[in-house]
Length: 105
Image 1: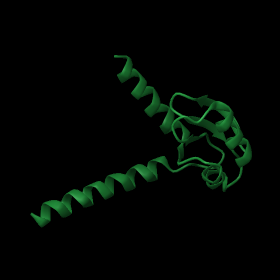
Image 2: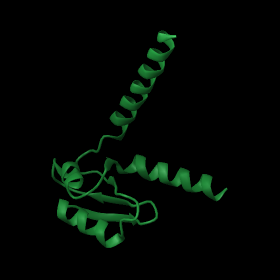
Image 3: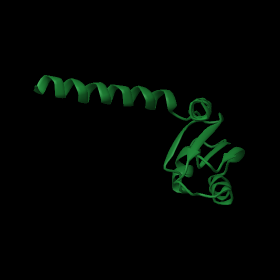
């Protein structure tokens, strides 16, 4: 039984590691910043501006801001400005489109 538990935990850790590597933000490329639910467009825009980025797209329904910043520490700046997850923007846009198409039927 311990072997099964270890296998499950190890598999979950490997899947999470693979996701984080694929989703790691690349400086100079679009970045998706996920904010807490209920964050308004002006709050997200202010957070992106504080971090030194330029807004490409805001999605208040999902509390996601797609933006681009030049600095190497832009992702860290977004975390300091209130984002709870910062990932590669193209991956996030694909996931959001997929979720919406499933929701719309």
